[in-house]
Image (cartoon, rainbow, N blue to C red; front, side):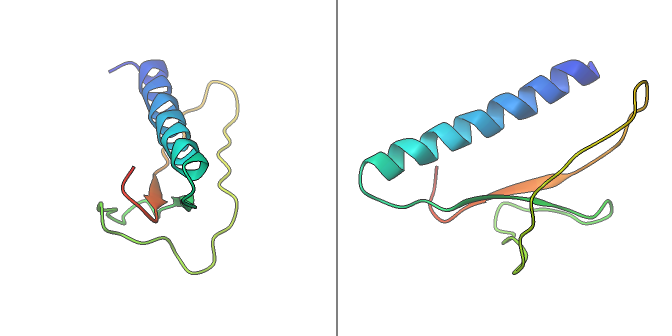
Length: 79
């Protein structure tokens, strides 16, 4: 799979999850949506909760370089 296509797929999935959370919030419920970084050798499952201290998620790389990264997206409700 092309790397650009993979990043586009990740961005679309995150935007869809955020949009679903915003729609639920408009209906009266408060949905907590958290994106958290994971360690390179750590497995993130669908029931893995975020760490207690959540910091902003930042990804960076220099030009013409590939950097592997993994993160989880967690919600307080099913979205």
